[in-house]
Length: 210
Image (cartoon, rainbow, N blue to C red):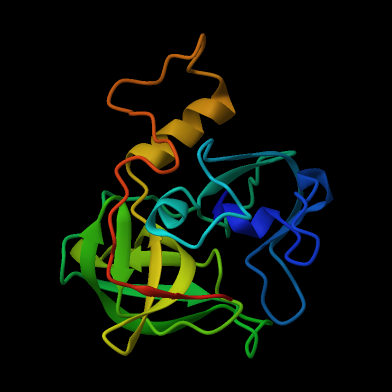
């Protein structure tokens, strides 16, 4: 299960949340879920720092994967595939359980990719508080696929935007951590190491704390 890494921390104490205390409610709608599963463990990007400065580097690494205790075999629950980072100008949509509609998922709005910079997607989506970790979908080809998760709100030239990791190599790295494919410090082919502070460049965005 894909989410933003900052969702695995207590915003008040800044301490990590024990992932085994998390319950996943698949297909939650109006007080009922299609399946209920506890979380076995979680892995976050190794370069992510929760209590760090709001920056492009932090957003790029703000992803995590959760492993469920048992697979969901309910045929009414179909997982979405992920896709390569969308092109600039591509139409996307944010699906969330935001603060004012927590009982059912909804397509918050259809927006577009404004820029791709240093592994971060800058999107024209003006998301609500409570949308952190929400999936961002691409609809190209008529099939919805996840291309990012919401990490932060920001402003660019006075316009409200949202920011998220571009996934790609970062997601491959997390999958390797979760499955134990990479051993002895080696990473899967095509996956590079990312360290906080390396290759940082400004996205031109003024960050807004959620």
